[in-house]
Length: 217
Image 1 (spheres, helix red, strand yellow):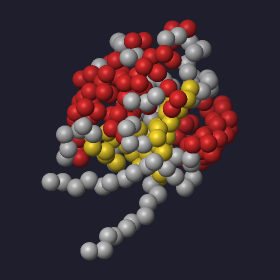
Image 2 (spheres, helix red, strand yellow):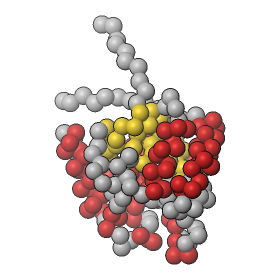
Image 3 (cartoon, helix red, strand yellow):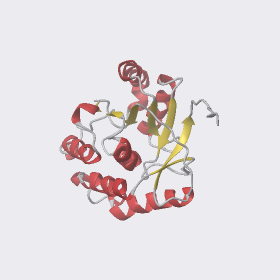
Image 4 (cartoon, helix red, strand yellow):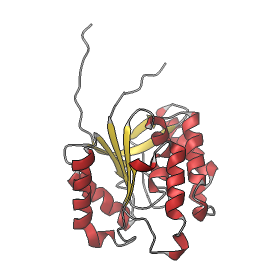
């Protein structure tokens, strides 16, 4: 029987650049912890300046609902897609306000391996905004190169199925390869294999704040 490292956050914040990012990177983990923690899922761009994406907001709410995230725990910003580097200071200030109002114990943002300009800006500004907080990076498969999970969280078959079902709510992106159920499952199986578990969600370590404690016998 293998022992897992147990970590806990009463309030957990997930921050992504665009609708679908959080679900692709963290969907199984969110499904796993939604019954046990207070979550805030923040997407900085609603992508509504693109007329081809008019259904995306509703699809995002439905996707999050599958994972167990209520609408009151979802925030959609209006920063312009692909122009995040131009609004770096505004994004920093936006995150600082989120930190003050929600005060998360753990923050999940994009991996450092992600080359999308919006994703990279989110991660850089989050590390400034959430000083003194544990920050982990999730993988969005379509835009990361060289990602290797250094922090693996075991998830269940039920969590895997919920992640797959959540991504299927994005009818707008139905033809994109990274929404295929077999890709989602294979990624979770691969991460599980690295952890010697059936399934795992994988993250890179941006900052971990911890305290080591020993129970007296």
